Image 1: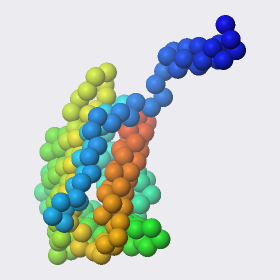
Image 2: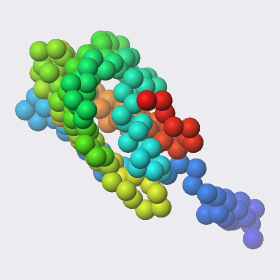
Image 3: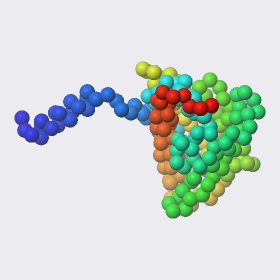
Image 4: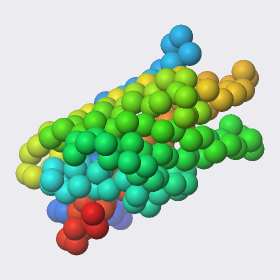
Length: 192
């Protein structure tokens, strides 16, 4: 057996026998632009129990810890037990040009589902709707279906701006859900 074959065999044996350190699994990811709408859909499995994932997603003031581009997230009011008015500010960059984008949304909460609809009068978007739906998956994991549809109310550069915004939606959403998984796997419950 050559030295190279020995190393490859050892590496494969280690890889097969090692426990999964991170079970973040993407089933579907699609970003597209049509008729001024930036649309992104992600279906992902998180290695964390559904109740903990749900708890992390409903801890709105903690959103800045989930992604560095989320600058603030504040509950403005809770007009009903299953409804929240949420204001978030995120940093949106097109190359070296960055700006803060604020969105005021009504978040409708139901069992394992969050539906956020922006108020265009109080937001830097003309339209925004985001739905996060959780279902139990194998071995105590959680399947997340996340769909967002946004029409910016801010300037998007004509040269490459659409592509950059779609790429940012995709990468930042993936990063956010990786952080959700990590927080949901922690043993300590998140503060209310």
